[in-house]
Image (tube, rainbow, N blue to C red):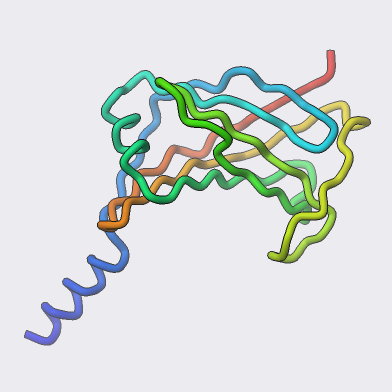
Length: 136
């Protein structure tokens, strides 16, 4: 009986996880301190789960510099699109981001993942995807 209660508690804490993979990346734009892009969903079912979620998290890392800290967050959720902003930080700790001016950077290559979780414990996350911006 104790094992059953332990497993039930563990599932409640961790939640149920599912992965989605049908989306496209559009509108990649670099400014002085941020890289912005949009995630477009073709599946309304995933979009409904994203809208119901209590936590929207975008996790990105730089392929060129693994020590580079990035703050990625959802700027806006509208129709079938999520707008994402990635801020490049000079500090490598988990405190507030001290933005870096990236205006002179000619190419940016990120690996990202979107994670959406609801208060009831359901977690919906994307496959890892790359976001590449290169000056033309």
